[in-house]
Image: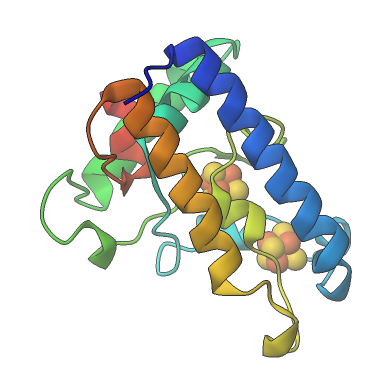
Length: 171
Ligand code: SF4
Ligand code: SF4
């Protein structure tokens, strides 16, 4: 198996996500409600009955490097810990059965990793009126497969997808 340094893999991950975002924007998002005109911005990210975003180790590293550059890094880390404890999140068992309000949503800023590190399901998500306008699941699955491959090339074992707060804490 080809070995890749984490630094190079993080750049490849960023390119992969940028390409995915471009595809979503150009082919689908124009049919969705505009987030800029949303009366409840962040409702999607803070809905504790809806959010169950899972990410891999490599994605968590990308998010970690963004959070580490923030002046309020300590607050964000505290929010991540509070989320884990409040929603009883864990790294084992049926992790997809639990949902949480995302600790990366900041009321003044929005998604803290919008520019770099945003998880694939978040890039794909928007409010569509018609179900048939949504990006096909296969598009997300294809991108997730490539993220799986990148992780495996760097860490030499199959990627584990964990709830975002757990994955960031482990990173
Ligand atoms: S995805 Fe929907 S709920 Fe979230 S900010 Fe955009 S329009 Fe609002
Ligand atoms: S990572 Fe960003 S877009 Fe995704 S749920 Fe959290 S705040 Fe929202």
